[in-house]
Length: 320
Ligand SMILES: Nc1nc2c(ncn2[C@@H]2O[C@H](COP(=O)(O)OP(=O)(O)OP(=O)(O)O)[C@@H](O)[C@H]2O)c(=O)[nH]1
Ligand SMILES: [Mg+2]
Image 1 (cartoon, helix red, strand yellow):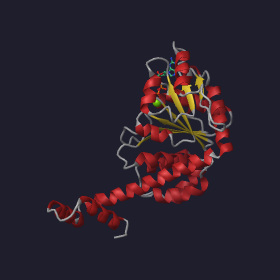
Image 2 (cartoon, protein in one colour):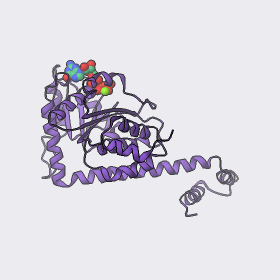
Image 3 (cartoon, protein in one colour):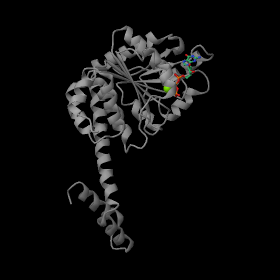
Image 4 (cartoon, helix red, strand yellow):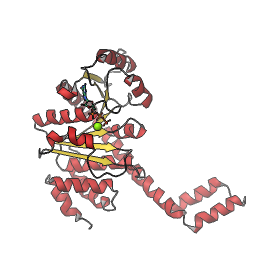
């Protein structure tokens, strides 16, 4: 049954967990009603501070996220957690490991936890995560933590849509080199060397310092990424992570970076929605006589593919 959008949005804004979950399901399922949902949410967003966490599998993202939830709850903040898995088809539920690690927060009414699978969305990653964040934002979250699973380009994309991106690494195993190769060093505003109870944490910190060029001079007004050592499993170092996040948040606000990042990610969201809409129209066209006719003319040598594509784009965008 199609949900009553205004009612759902009202209830989500009052913080009713079931309404929040339902709205995020609409995002996950790319519901046609998202249009109405987003229109209704637009005036109520922009409050939450969005933190992305990324890093290699098993580095401790979920454990750190859970520890950060505890730290922010102690500070009286309402917290949303979004675990985004770009490699899974729609799941509609929490990932098993996360369910266990986040379990201690399950009964806290000041915490919303949600996993979201986005595989199969056309350009979905670029809009699904920001839209789910908007739901949590409108529901009154002060902080939204976005954990991405895996370290590929799509994870980098999601993480870079946050206000602040946290990159987690663990000692040894050449994590730093791997991260550099995956392109996640560039997006880190705060670096966390987790599992500092293991050997080699200091070496990893040195390696990071070196790779990030932290010893070098920076332009005044440039952000110098922080590096924090943690043992997330014992909540050690987590207050220092919160401090580093607060410092970055304040720095961004002071330098106009926060507004720039937010309008930048909104622009990418619009782009993704527009590209998705165009792709859908092209998809419809595959069954269309016009595309078939263009193909016939190219095969017959009376038309070239670029001119044909120009004609198609002009028709799709209503300029033909
Ligand atoms: N020794 C040690 N183990 C830790 C620490 N933090 C987390 N772990 C363990 O590392 C394993 C993976 O932790 P997760 O938090 O699930 O890691 P993740 O990055 O979310 O993993 P994926 O989501 O599967 O990529 C678990 O068994 C944790 O208990 C730590 O500081 N020290
Ligand atoms: Mg995890």
